[in-house]
Length: 628
Image (cartoon, rainbow, N blue to C red):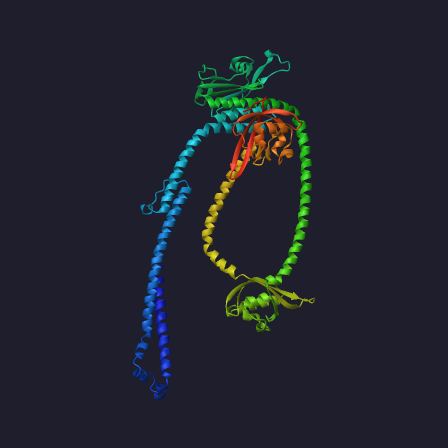
């Protein structure tokens, strides 16, 4: 509080003490002058002062009470100053704590705390929190470094699965996209894709490899190169069906060209594209740096997936036209069915809404007289009738307002506003707004008012109908909220921006993960903690023969025979919600497809936990073709 405020308090209480003493002195003197002996003498004040010397003290009452008022207010002012200092000290401490917490939120872990606050219990706790966050950050970085290689391989396989899923109708585009992806993802210098061209005669001497794509320094190269079966490193790799890795590359074997000249690479990696021991092509990669073991393993795993994809593409090319026409017809039928369903739902919702509004309107009409403050009056403001809520609000009895005018419920300064409202009503116009009113006791209240003229068949105004609601508490709350609006507005905007950024990140991750799983070559299914199927990708549809609409929402036991679900430990635990699942182990077990056939597959089960909710995702591979 400012010094001027303290002085105003001292002055105010001193003046009040002086006024009280003056009034008290005047009353005592007036009562004394009214006494019989003084009144008979007729000498007045001087005679009174002569006979009653104590009256001189009465004359000093203004000064005495002014001093007392000053002393009392001075004690009050000292208390206020002491409280103000304490509040200011706590405010400084609060600002320091909030600033420290905000720095922690922003990742500024080296913020310094003033020495005068370090012995505070809260400050010590914040320092421990900062030390914990620093240690957690170090541990997280260590874990990140340990998981980096594994994550690199996993992400590469997932991205490559999406790439293979999208490019399934053109071998030339597929080969270029594959080699372009490998060169970029592995950050190497050059790569070539050799596709096996085998005539229908299937004579070994007639087989040859044709270079369908070549990429160097992230640019597409056009090379017309043919290698016969068994010739060169490419032919040898295909013949032996084994990977060839060389770090001692002969001069002139492969030249990597740039704007500064040509150079021989430091390492060559040649990987066969085979599936079920059948060769479909060869990938050759060249780099100035050696290939790491996990990179070689990554390319070998991709080679298996690429071989399966090439086989699938050759089949897809033959059937794509018929499939495309079938899909168009199916989409049209599905669209028409969806439109019919939406129209039916809209008609049902419209009918339900109409019935609900009818019931709601009847309830409103029945409740108005019990809930609203209602009255009727003439166009000049003379009251005709009022309801019980009106009397309770203004604290009048019925006989007290009979024949009265609305002006008795307005303050003098608001009567002009009432006249304007009455003039508007006399013109047949409605009025709605918040109006300040006066009760019988002189209390100030605020009413949300609606005045509506009631007209007869000739268009003449018969009376005015008033419906009002007491919004005094709302007005008081609005005043309180207005004072804190700016502070809350800033905090709300910051929170809103932060939530938007988190939502965008979460949504992007969700979409990316769903696309990756949907396009995987492996069958992938997801169940909740109760064993209900929630995800069923295209590969799972192909493996089981069911469409996702037939299994989603069903129990996972539908995918296994009863004998397997009862006797196989892994499947029994998987389908039973109360048993512990076998997580992270590749286990062979039979599944039951739609046609009643049991097919042996490999299962790899993972678990995800968010709060109290659990979900289990199974990666299923056909035992005959292991892709990953």
